[in-house]
Image (cartoon, rainbow, N blue to C red; front, side, top):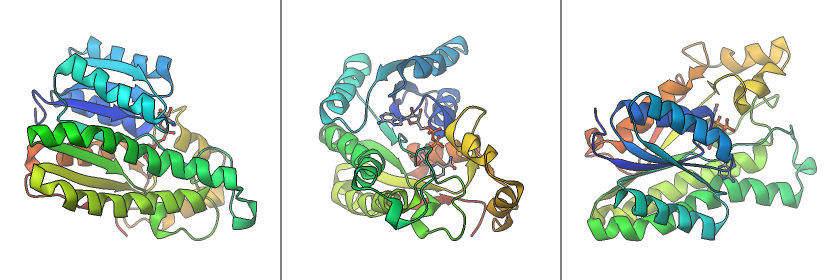
Length: 260
Ligand SMILES: NC(=O)c1ccc[n+]([C@@H]2O[C@H](COP(=O)([O-])OP(=O)(O)OC[C@H]3O[C@@H](n4cnc5c(N)ncnc54)[C@H](O)[C@@H]3O)[C@@H](O)[C@H]2O)c1
């Protein structure tokens, strides 16, 4: 029970990695506010946690909307009194495959940067002052190995140029914020997942299943461990960084990629 007594906010918790993180946090004893743009779906995750004896409340929020993000933080304070942990998981590269820069519109660019970078900024901006007051906080952001560039076919990163740019931004943002807030007892880290096959119906599995056999094989052929990762394997890394086991770890990007 590494998170016993801790109060957490997890964005993007309706499915995929966010859902897996919420389930692992519940198993480790955290109470949570689960936030997602898919209100009904995130409520199902909270219900599952409740059935297993945990506590998870929900809020429907678009993480690109500053006012809604501020309201999300205030809801958590109203529910729990304090927030110890913020996990910024909401993100993704969408479902429409765009490979070359010529095909990336300005709107696509803005939407990817807003979701994958600005959303994390907005949540941290609203959260940090409250964590500063208490002199305690754990923030975990989610980057992507796409930040280092991918070669060849699109794979599961549907619109990878702006996505890679936003996920690179998460790295710089995490390094800098970690330095800025370390004196206040706030730790800021990021997890960099590689190719993680999430549950049936979630975005990445859907993107993978429409690839031809050759492209599917290419996705794991360069992974030293020789397979896709599982969502629970990413969740374990997030739980470590959110816990006091990581008491001397801040400003780190933890790669969960099956090797490089
Ligand atoms: N699965 C992977 O292989 C992989 C690899 C690297 C990084 N990532 C990152 O991990 C995170 C989760 O990915 P996933 O595979 O679980 O994706 P997913 O699309 O299955 O889940 C993302 C969740 O975020 C929510 N969301 C989307 N837009 C939102 C918004 N504007 N406001 C609030 N919630 C919103 C969705 O409803 C969904 O529940 C993302 O940041 C993604 O970029 C995933």
